[in-house]
Length: 218
Ligand SMILES: [Zn+2]
Image (cartoon, rainbow, N blue to C red; front, top):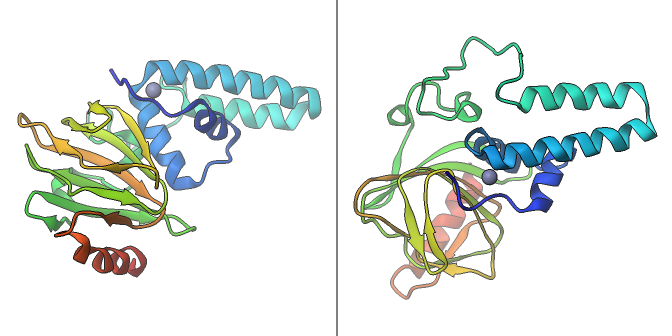
């Protein structure tokens, strides 16, 4: 079970439908695996529905009702036939990863890290998968924008603690971190970056122009 969850403001924005799509994708992937956040979301949605009902009786509450139903795991709903409930791929990501992680176009970022781009949001945020070998280390870096990470498989640690499957981590320019994957298993993450990360170590600074070029090239 996840120990790190989207902040209440983020869940509220998700409930209100005001999150950018790439961030909403990250939040909904977390929700698939987190009973606690799903319960909080239901509360937020019903509060929102109540407020909307007071404002605009019929239409708004119907819209909210259908969006609540669409988000709930157990609610009766029609799903497109392509959704595979037994897959290791979260349902929210299956539109981008129809088969398995192996079928993605991975490229090496370092000997222990591979990345595969899923999609770029309309505002330029990049949604990527990262696959890091057991014991692999991401060079020390900071962020020029927000970085959302959802840990799908494996675990990693950084200066702030240890993160496990389902954990939702947000980092921004105030954080400088050096994540290290645990030795037992490879780590697979979904990441959304608003702007390229900046490596801060002396030997890795030369990578920054390459990362910036990659970020804006797609
Ligand atoms: Zn949660």
